[in-house]
Length: 500
Image: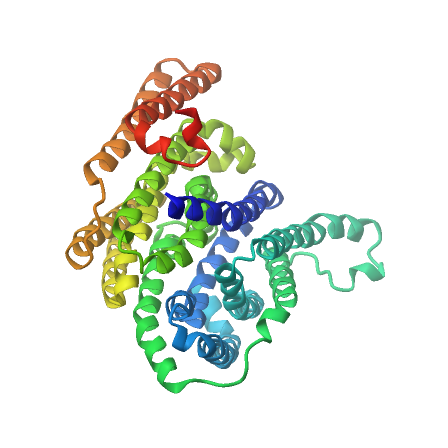
């Protein structure tokens, strides 16, 4: 159980800081929906941020996962960092230059024709974040959580502060003192551009603090190792593109395929994006888990009991995300007030449980994907993710004109569900892991039934007090039920076992 305890510790240290940072970022949603109320700016922001992950995946080239895999090999330990950083610096410079050169065409493609400057700012954000990724990975590998947490959280705080000044403080100052020298960098109507400026400030800060780690490398490339890393990483990059299509391309398709005037379609994108934020409770946990789990899984791989450890990790993971599903879906009337400040966007709340379940599937898929990462069969990951991407594109293409963002939500659900199932059956043949599959499926079915029960009963008695009371009762009941079923497992957990 020490390995589970170690993973829990990594998730707490690295993950909790990431959760806190992401939660701070999520707090921008109610602020931005309020600032951009009655406009299409929030939809434009969604379109810009749907493009950024594509370029980041291209510049990163799967090297973060490759770093964790190859740093385990002592014969490569000295060369891995130098080779990866040198390669990234060269490729990132080239890709950034190309992106800026074609900024107008990219802006036209994603539907923000009049703002190519947004693409320029985004290109610099991507470049800075790419260069920072491996130094961040080095902190995780070496077990330096305090510095990691400080950089992540402080960076988000800087982002929020800069965004607030440009969107709230400077406009007020502009009205009262339009000739103030403090407004030298301010231009009324720049809108989403200032959100990007806040993000750029965060990226600059992160890289500045990581300079010491960054410059530990030497300008040299182990050619043989580089070729090996590229062959391992290329399928991960393809899978990354497929994953980005699954996660963000539906915004672009919504804007283009909805049979509505451009501004109305962009506002629908904003509704979808705002309601998508309500599924982030599970996404945040997945991100936190990933930060701790990735180096843990590779280090654990040399243990003969590794498959059993992976199975137990999956069990606890599914239990946690099932509880989170109930908290997010049954209390949606609370979350909508806190996160979405524009009541016109509440019409999209019906997609929240669908997206929550989709993110549960994604989290399980991430756990399952360990089989092809460990065995080096990363091509399998590319095939699985591209299958999901095909499902996303086909469903969105044919059904958005009829069902709007509801089609996008179901496309996400079916995409991640298919990837989860394919990875499970393929992985059990290539790298068998004794997952308690029937029990885990039962837990997910139970929470789905509890959601429908809550939805059915609150449909008869429309009372916020009744809704919250019933939500608390059902959530507590599920937790009590699982604690009884898993009593022996929980007894083995550090700290928690004392309660059983």
